[in-house]
Image 1 (cartoon, rainbow, N blue to C red):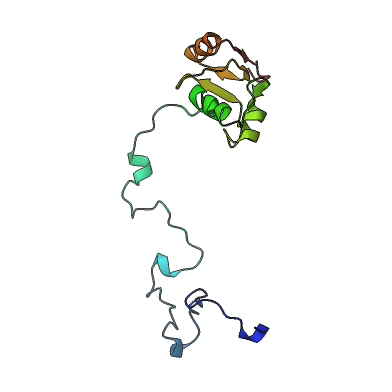
Image 2: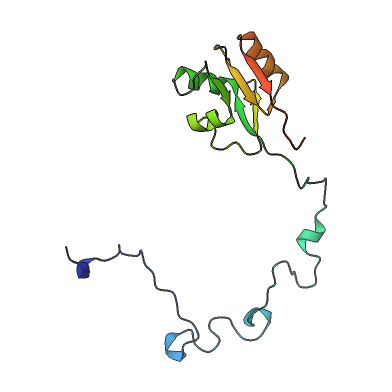
Length: 156
């Protein structure tokens, strides 16, 4: 095989239509934009404009309040932690924190912290160091003979 024999797959590289390049192109003069009007002009944005009618974003009611600095926690269930311990990806004897959960593959990222929920069964006695946990999760960990430490974050 030589360099001049290389080619793209059929249909992989489609050439863009060159508009406003004379009458022979079939897209000359008005370049497919029609005649006159706001949409034929350049530099005009008519995103939410509905021709004098009350636009949709103003017709719909606004409800509630979106906190600008709210925390987003990575959620993990006890059943999933037990599954990874059984598979040998997590060490039950070592302290399990957010970093250990990411390294083992339980979580993709920690976000603003890790929150443990009680779904599933935990059989191994583990030490969990996380940013939040449900009451049922704390009880389940202590029932299995482990310890769950909720770390206080600096922002709280």
